[in-house]
Amino acid sequence: MLLGLLQFLVDAVAYVCVLILVAIGAGYLVVIGRFLYDWARGARDPEAPAIPDADLPHVLLQIPVFNEPLVTEQSLRCVAQLDWPKDRLRIQLLDDSTDETTPRAAAVAEELRANGTIIDHVRRTDRSGFKAGACAHGLTLTNEPFIAMLDADFRPPADWLRRTVPLFLSDARAGFVQSRCEFQNYETNWLTRAQGLIQDGHYMVEQRSRALAGWLFQFNGTGGIWRRATVEDAGGWSDYSLCEDLDLTVRAELQGWHGLFVSEPPIPGQVPDGIRDFRRQQRRWSNGFVQVAQKTILPIWESDWPLVKRVMAISLIAHQIFFPAAAIGLIAFLVGALLHGSLAPYYGLMELVLFMTLLVALGITLAPYLALKRGTVVDYAKTVGSVPPLFIYLAFANGAKILQTIRGRKSTFKRTPKQETAPVSDGAPADAEASE
Image 1 (spheres, rainbow, N blue to C red):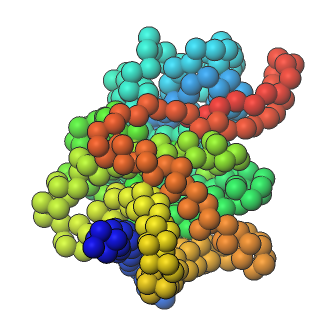
Image 2: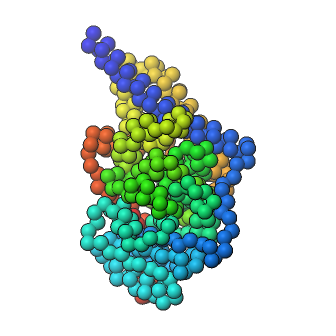
Image 3: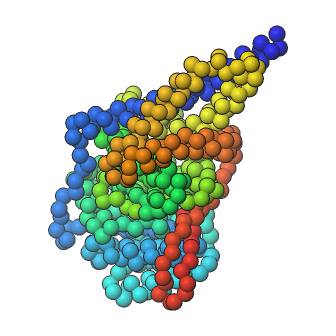
């Protein structure tokens, strides 16, 4: 009797976890279906109209940094070369650093000002609100109608603003424009290749398809531009979540704004090249998504959006539940196998999960890999084969933390280290710095 009850409970847990995984997978399959539909009909990204320099709007470019001297110097030198009238582009370095970043950045800013670049070096007395707090503070100091945002390790091409900002002028309800991000350290090791594969799929399939369908898609925190009126209408930046960018995206959409996505030009950045830093980054994102989901799922469901849009929005912000569901489900399978004396009772469930995993993995990653010419088919097979084990690792590494966040545990912002070396102007040796 007791053994039978235990078997029933374990089986119930396994079935519930599989249902969660199938629901998440179904959301991705809908996105993949939309991607194939857009491909078949030849859908294209919105194109920015050509606008004379005299009619270009003023733009504020925010770069939040913390203790990253070299990448900050490089970032300033890069954005100073953007093709935009110098008197209409204000660069705002939001510097919360406590190390040598501040004096080194100040020196570079002074050098660039001599060439006509407008740079404000903004310092706060504390890091309250972290990135969200820094961005919110920066907005109180200026009044430019458009706000571009870059993390310190991202290097936009010179024509980035020319090919994005004018989109706002032809779409009055466009709240933000998100550019596709690429990753310059993509080929460093197996981990960066796996991340690059996933991120290419995220931008080229998920983000682009959601945008073309008119569904909610997220502002990624870098490589994008906000309309100031949208930020203000949505209530400004909030620091309750570690994913302040997703939170603002949802609030803006609920106010009737929408985002635009552009695949070109891509903005090169970096992905973590070590498993510990990758896990930390993923944990921050997972916990941040959960925090946003807890606060916004009900308002989304009660909104007047079409049913499909509401369902797809919830599938976006709630998909991080995959990790604890996968971890608990795997444990249930193993415990159930011991109780039943075999995995046979779970063959059907396992086949369903494996089949959906294959469909989603190929559907999300194959087309971008081929379109962007990332490598050979053999290389693709090796890389895509590393993704499911990597997700299983994350399920056990981060699943418990996600459940703790669901129960109300507060998390602190932990930076993701980024490695970058280059000669510096003062003759000091090249160094490796961390980027937020």
